[in-house]
Amino acid sequence: MRSRFYITLIGLVILGSLLLAGSTFYLDLLWFIELDVEQVFWTQYLTRWGMRIGAFIFLFAFLFANLMFTRRYILSFPNLALREKLMASGAMRFLTPRRLTLYFTAASALLAFVFSGYVGTAWMDVLRFFNQVPFDISDPIFGADVAFYVFNLPFYRFIYEFLMMALVITLLIVAGIYIFLNAPSPGKQNWILPPSKAVSHLAVLLALIFGLKAWDYRLSQLELLLSDRGVVYGAGYTDLNANYIVLMVLMVLAAAIALLFIANIFLRRFRFFIYGIMALVGVSLLGGWAYPAAIQNFVVEPSEFSYEREYLQHHIEFTRAAYGIDQFSTRRYEASQDLNWDDLRENEGTIKNVRLWDYRPLLTTFNELQAIRPYYRFVDVDIDRYTVDDEYRQVMVAARELDKSRLAERAQTWVNLHLQYTHGY
Image 1: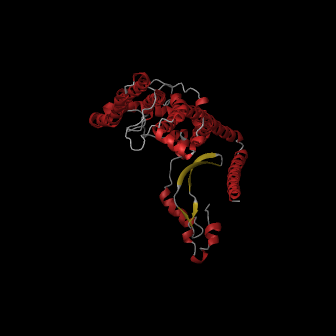
Image 2 (image 1 turned 60 degrees about the horizontal axis):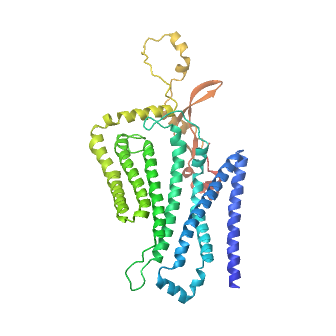
Image 3 (image 1 turned 30 degrees about the vertical axis):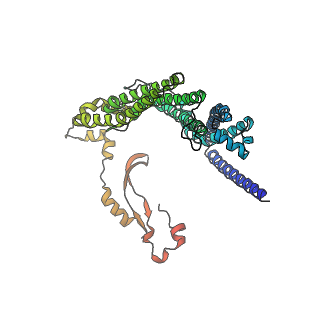
């Protein structure tokens, strides 16, 4: 009876979750249909789920393949003490090749489902990448089309983060299996040396991680064009003459460490990649912060304008282009104080738009003459332009707002405060 109760409870929870998700989906669909943009809804929805299904399949296949690689090693039971415990408890019957395959399938499916959930949030980056158009404007630093930074770079960053997540999760699981199976027996201090296949397996995963990290450093170099460190947005002197160089060194080191991990499969000299990792961490800590900070504080800031002049010019030029004002030109007009009637008639539009009213006394006038009720008030006066009697002219606009605190005390009821006296006009 108790098991039936739990099964019923779980079924009700699942059914309730499906109904809640279905109602949310249907209401969102009705909203988009009402706005006559149903295609937008389906594009977003199908892209999100398509990405999640694709990520699930990739993660499942990658995790399952790596776990299956450890199956033979698990069944060999290198830890004799652990094997004896399992045999004594009768748990050995659960560690057959068939059962391990089922365990790995279930674990891979569960982990793939959990960790593939976030990829749908990058649906816009994916759609932009596959529907990109060139800007036909090259950036002055790397010479790439501006479209690359809008469409390609965010997509590449998403791919990097997803692949790094898959590799790190797989490495932690696989390494945990090997460490657990090679742990020393009770009363002994020596670890069991893993076989060459286990070492090679871990080395390949680490090589992929560091190779991917080298790509990350390259992406970070390109992202310097989006830096917000300086006085203006974009790459500055320190970014290109300090950070860029450090990232280049880190990229080369990461690629070299990846190659060392592959070479170590045959050389078996662990100190090489240990020294490489120490060098990478050292350059990352010192070069990633200390060197750029020293360049900025002791080289750039004492004569900032001379060092940043070129990059300020880039910022001004591309800002003007972004707002569409790069085609404007400036000309000097000499002002004349000798006006005649013909000048006034030729510039009728300018004369009619000379502001004669002052918003400050007008605010007081509005509150005195237009408040109408004690609970109305004007907060400010805005200067706007409207077409009045087929004439586009300047007007002063103010909103009559409601101040519920000015209601009479006996009128401050719940109905008045929450239903009736809620908006001005």
